[in-house]
Length: 253
Image (cartoon, rainbow, N blue to C red):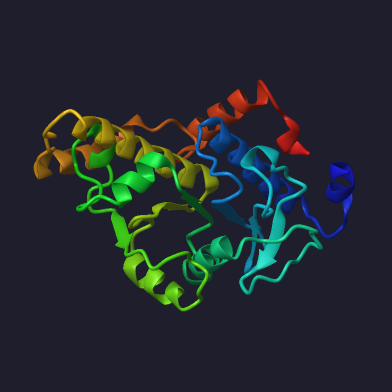
């Protein structure tokens, strides 16, 4: 039972809170149509435990993820919580290398959304042609497709290509979003997804109008003034969780 897991001495209150937040995020992603069968991943560091992070159990749909069935692993892929579920190596390799080398990457999200994969497969990638895209000018890294991410040696190139950025389009592959908190990573992923969706719609109609560089600079300077209280993405994520709760609260278990 979920209650028994929560009461197990090896799971702290901080970890249980992180588990619930991450489980809620998986349900939000599913509600938004960002599930990809049993694939793709959102990972979250375990507070107070160096090198430990939570990941979804391989074989479950996003809509089946709960706080209690998330898997806790270390940076070498060892399970730390006795979970009966396996972990997808493709998810582990990519997320572990970022968690290992980026202290500020508290939460990492990777998806294969149609819009994200389409723009990542387009020469030139994301273009400054809409409100959301303007926010990401100069802030997105790109990494060439090397096949499914199961080889450890690709990790060095992922980190090198990311550089000092915390958003990436994996070419021909999809979106990677990172944040100092889960809500921050969420709002960055949501905004990039919207930018990609609008780019696809715009390009299907004709020649897009690019936002001039000087306007992009003003936009990026001022965008923080439109942020709700609580930190980046906090109010946005909380609103999405409330929507999930209207139909299914089982993620809390």
